Length: 269
Image (cartoon, rainbow, N blue to C red; front, side, top):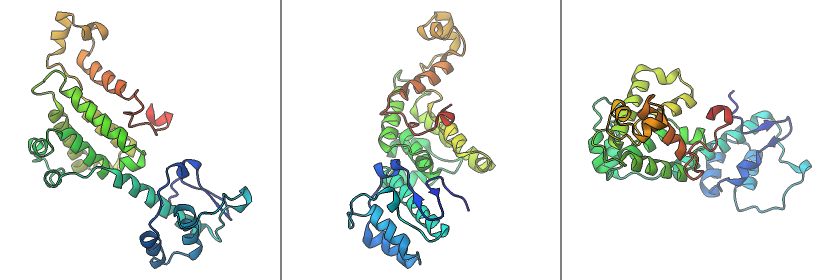
């Protein structure tokens, strides 16, 4: 049995991290709790969930010795699974709804024949944003890494503006969306996705999305021979590539844009 890390188990109780209560979602008692009861979940589990996550029971905070009790580890695990389901649904529900035309385009996102220009047209010139939202949700990376929807939205908007900075007719946000979708196809059709960790998949999609950020439309040799500011900054070494990466990570220094805010230090590195 895979435990998700949401709980620290004892034989007689379950401990919930305080961070969970700071962003917990209230259950709809008419839907969620009735569904639990129909699934044959023990009454002590539904009672604990109701008292913890719904508004129908408002009791004074319990003392340390008054934590909810479970008769068995199985009941604690059942409660944990339901809370995790709530958590995932809350993040997924927060993702913006795509227009019907965009959804129709994205049905072909697994195909080599995917039409990125059609996506850009139906998404009102936001191909990269629409595609990244779709893939991050498909891989459930938004829930796995607790990516705030507000940060993701602002990050993608800023990313697209950066791609348009130099009016580049090729190395623009449509090209970035095309490369990101191609990477998705490679991961999926080669089966490589099953050999990578979730963090590696996230890193791969992120790399594809930012790979030409703020591209000037000129070559590295052009920058070097004209002694441009970028060439001077990066000492004539991988001028454009160094800038794409540096500028993209500079965006993440803004806490309102940092989609990796909940990564551990090890994951970030």
